[in-house]
Length: 469
Image (cartoon, rainbow, N blue to C red):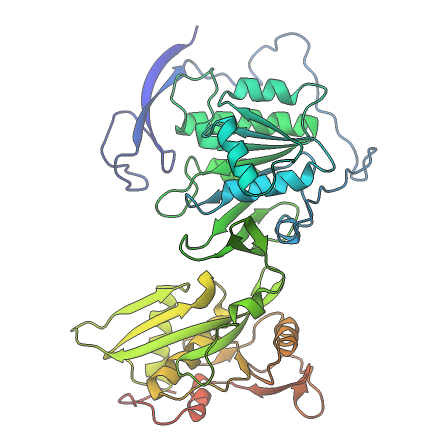
């Protein structure tokens, strides 16, 4: 008979310790060690142990298979379907994370209401009562949707319902941190409970070809709460991003076994819930002020979608001994690197100024192609001269000041031309695809090879002591 022992597990990273400590030695988080009970005993390998009855070998099939592939389930909300890779795959598990109050439950309730028109859908809540879910559905105008509701946090009850003949085709669990399995003594939300509950639900999902949608809480650092292995267990991980005070929401795929990663869907929060935004580029640029210094339009790529966004910069004299560097929607370390390149390679002095950078619309830019647009916005603010209002800018800047080519140039230019832009500043193309007059998609292209070639666009710029070419 196996003996039981206690150990302490970090709720942030899953590290195990023999005794309690206020600080986790693995991830350095405070007050995250929770006591759990584990069974101990001599470890036996499968090869050395005796099988319980007749053992069965694994069954292998060829790649073509003998069964017909099940079609994807599309809900009709194109932004959600695109992020999932074209719809939900039968037997897949999707984990949706986001800040509290960002709209995760609202989005999934709207998705279920659409999917219920062509199948059986169930919404299981461990945080709200059935009456509370009905009130939210009525507020969203979904009071007549054919949905099955349940308020429970027992994994055993949910798995038993998924194994019945009239089991739902799509099921939402809100949230995985509130679920518990009675085979463990620990409380709901602990590492062991989250891992075990997710494993039971995913196993039942694969057997019945059910689409499983799990809602996950996030920590104050913005990562999914619970063990990191939870993200490896599911097929798709979606993050719902955006400021609660802002009406835009971004649904981003950070992992997808059945589609492209870094794909995004754009939604707008309204009194009737989340409404999809079909042309986010036009929406994000709708309030852009013309002929204003310190702004530049960046042609970026989010997943497979080209998107134009405005980058704002403010360079102001500093009254502090150490000037401030503040960013919203961009990497602060990359801003520091870019300022060093501008001063060292282009001779533009910014060392005694506070620098503020903002990506409008609540977006977050991760690709290095935004370097050239950020540099143009910084120079524009420093000189007080506006970037041409009909120009888009993109390109990666290296440490020696060279401007490197980026991917999907044609898609960026096509999106800019669709929104009425007339010219583009970009790195030289590896294979020039422009017309005889230096235009592409109706745009006048200006190829830049070094960051110093941006300086003629603006007037007088504060010069550094010496630029190193």
